Each structure stands twice: as C-alpha cells, then as structure tokens.
Image (tube, rainbow, N blue to C red; front, side, top):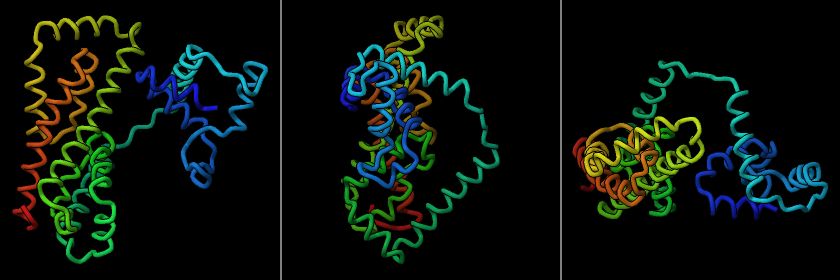
Length: 268
C-alpha cells in the first residue's frame, strides 16, 4: 500500500520533506508500540482515504496526484499551524546544558561503565549514525567529536573514530543539501528572482564559494547548513559540495579531538 509513495520518493527526492511531513501528520498515536515501530499511516486509514478519494480502498493513485497532495498538505499545515518561537534564553540554556553534559561525560568516562559498554556495543555503525544526526547541526548543536575522549576510553581507535565521525557528519550535511535542492524545486514560482540571482552568482564564481565552504567547515563552529543549503539552491553539484564539506569536517573534527585530548586526556 505504501509502494507508490516509496517509488515517488526514489524518483523525486526533492519531495522527501513533504512526504516525511505527511507521514508524521497522519501517523497513529500509538505507532511506537506496534511493528514496524515507524510513524507511518495505518493500513486502515490509508484504505479509508483511498476509498473516499477513488471509490476503491485498493486503488493505486497516480504519482503526480500523490506529489500534488503531499505538497499541498504540507503547505496547508505550515500556514495553519501556530508559530511558536523558543525564547533565546531557553536556547542558550539548552546549549549550555549540552556543553556541561559533554564535559561531565569526558571527565567521568572512566567511571560510567554502562555508557562505555553501550558505546562499545554500538560500535562504529552506531557512531556513524550518531555522527549523521550531529552533522545536521540544526538538530544537535554540539558536534559528536566533542565526546572523542569518551569514545577512546570506550575502546575506539583514534583514526577509525575520526574517519567515521567525519563521514557521518558529512552525511548530515547531505541532508541539508537535499533540503536546499528540494526548496529550489518546490519554490520555483515564489523565489524565481532570487533563484536567477543565485544562479548568476554561481556562473560568475564557480570555485570561490567551494573554497569558502571548505574553510568554513574546517574552522567555523557553526552549522555547515548555513552555506550548504544555499549552495544546493544555487545548483552547485552534490559531489563538489560534499567534497569540500568532507575535507573541512576532517580538519575540524581532528583539531577538536586533539584539543579535547589535551584537556581531558585520552588517546590522541
């Protein structure tokens, strides 16, 4: 029943944000209690929607109609939903709490055996997934490399650890690129003037922005998405952007890990 939606996601990746938004909006309340433990619409709900729309609960909607519906519904939820802004002081306190937690974990790494065993059990695949989440810094503002002394204390090796973190964080930046690319496709009629200016800038300066992106990712402790998303909108190639980000992530995470090793100790 979900096959048409999965095929649409594969063929039109710029619709991923709208598809994920629809999936979350139509999820059952107890989705986390039943297999497959994913926030997906129930079969009963899908059959009811298909029957009311097409007169047949087993109907297969055309891809274009699915695309129009999920795009429209995402736009309606955005317009109708209340806009709630988190106060700046709350954000500052949250970041301060995360930093304090990082310091505590690294200082007590030798004493929290349960956490070390859990990290060791997750291994490099778990570290990679955590790095992907960390790489999308709009979600997790503290880089996963900040816990480098803890990972070393848990039995990880320095070089594989840094390589896994750099690759995973680049995967998080890939999500930002896909968001920028999706915005370019979904907002053609609204941002036509900005898009024209962005593409003109791209044509005039092809290499300079990539160099700046590399320096930014390597030395600026702010989300890479600040530059990655606009560069996707400007039609910079995925390979070029990800190469610049990966090289910058390697330098940033290596420098951060070495600095933390000097402060907290740990293998370097």
